[in-house]
Length: 230
Image 1: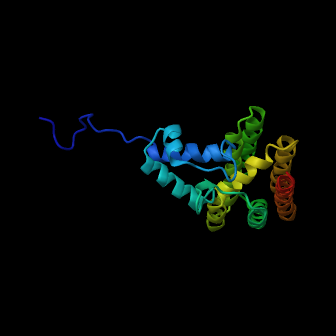
Image 2 (image 1 turned 30 degrees about the horizontal axis):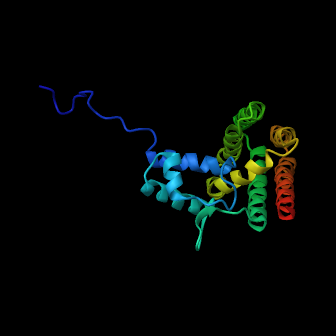
Image 3 (image 1 turned 120 degrees about the vertical axis):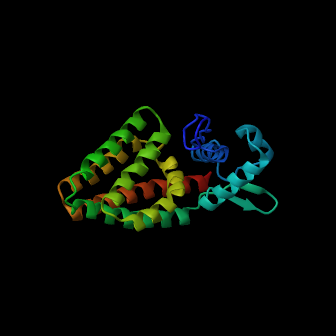
């Protein structure tokens, strides 16, 4: 007789991700990759077929994406891909610039020898993502780069603020990283941040991080301006 505490091998392994989580990730990626454009309607019936899930799951996913700022609900239209607003984008860049510059300065002034190798590893993945035209890898590796900066200096509250904006930040990044020479200039600007941290120059690291965000913001604002003219 098998004892109650013995492993019978009958235990069902829980899937690493639920159907809802998989559907959420797929629809979020489709919006960030431009499959669905700003102001496109998100029809529940069509999404059920495209995602292969129930209407209940689709509704839960849409509510979650609305909380992230990627979806909005308009009277008479229902759920749509939230239009990117230049004013809100500018505010997001302002928050990013202040917090990321602070984190970069603290990293430069830290004695932790693991910071630079971790940043260099994330930057190498960003380069690889550009080379292989893997936008998801560029976005994920960029998020990891900044997570390293904040976590290595124990600025978890600041990271929580940035992380709360990550989806909308990546929505903006998905626009800017596709512009001309961003695959060269973006990583070069981030390499300057790493170099300043490596040199333990806090003021230089602060400026390099702030300048990188200013550069990205300028590109985004040009994109918004061009769209208004179309």
